[in-house]
Length: 409
View 1 (cartoon, rainbow, N blue to C red):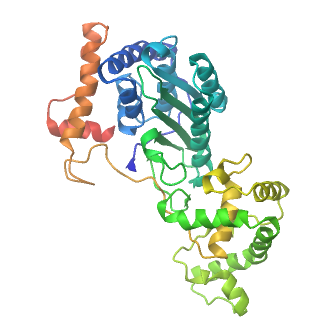
View 2: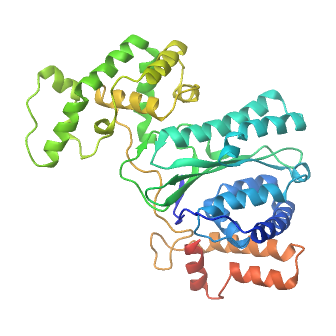
C-alpha cells in the first residue's frame, strides 16, 4: 500500500461562493481535458492517489493543507460534471455529512438510469458500503468518518474502475485523515485494501484489523462466530471476569511492580499478557459490562454463521464494538494477536532532495507536473489565468525548488 502524509487541519469556516464557483468552472475544464487525454479509467486511478488528488485541489486554488480541500474539491468536481457524466464516462456519488450516507442510493439511481445489470450496480454499492465499514470498524484509529465519495467509470468510454475518497476527523487533535481506495488494489476488502492513507500523525493505539499480520485474528473471529452463541458468550464472560484484573496488572507493571499471583487456569486464560511489549492494551479500556445491543448483534451473526470475515463485517449492525470484542477474545483467549500498528505513515510526495525518507523519484513527480501543466494549457480559460495557475504548479524553475513544492503537497 502506498502511504503518505499531508497536514490536514480542521476547517471551521465555509468556502466563499466566488471561490467555489471558480473551482467548478476550472474543474469542468480540467476534467474534460484529462478525460480526453487519458480516459475516464485513468482519471479514476489518479483520484485514488492522495498526492495527485491534493495537487488537483491546489491547482483549483484551494488551500493545500486544509481538511476542507477534500470536501470542497469533491463537491466542485461533482458539480462540474453535472449533466455531462455520461459523455465523460465518470460518475461521482456521495459527499459530506448526510450526503455521504446516501451514496449507495445515488449509485442505485445511476445504475437504473444507465441500465446497468443489477449485479454490477449491487457490487458498486457494496464496495461503497464496505469501504466505509472498513475504515470505521476495522481501522480503529480515532478518526470519525464524515465524508465519503464514490467515483466510478462506465462503458463505452470507461472500463468500470472505481475509487473511494473518504475522510475522518479527530477533534481532540484538530486534524483529519484521508483514506483512498482503488478498484485494482482492493481485490480483498478486509486485507490491506487501501490505495493510500494520508494523515498528519501516526497513532500508537490503533487496532488495525486490515493488516496482513492480523490474518489470524480475522480467521479466529470468523471461527468464534461459527461456533455458536453460547460458546462465544462463554468467552466474552471470561473477558468480563478478568478485565479489571488486566487493568490492575498492567498498571502495576508500568510502575515496575510484580504482578499478583494467579491460579494456573487464570494464567492460561490470560496467555501471559504480562509479557506484552505494549503498556497499553485495548482490553483495559473496553467496557465489558453487559451490552444488550452487542449481545443482540452477536446472536444474529452466530445464527447466520458467515463463512468469511468479509461477510461477517458486511453483516448489518456489525460495527467497531462487535469486531473489537471478537478481536479481543481471539487475542486474549486464543493468542491470535492483531496488529496495533497504524497503517498511515509519514512520507513525502515524491521523496526529498536530502534523500529523506528516500531519494526523489524525478520521473514520477515530473510526470505529475507535466500532466497538470498540459491539462491547464488545454483548458478554455484566459491566457492570464492559465499563466497564474501554471505558476501555482511550478512556482520556480529550479528542480530543487520544485521538489520542495511537491514535498509540501
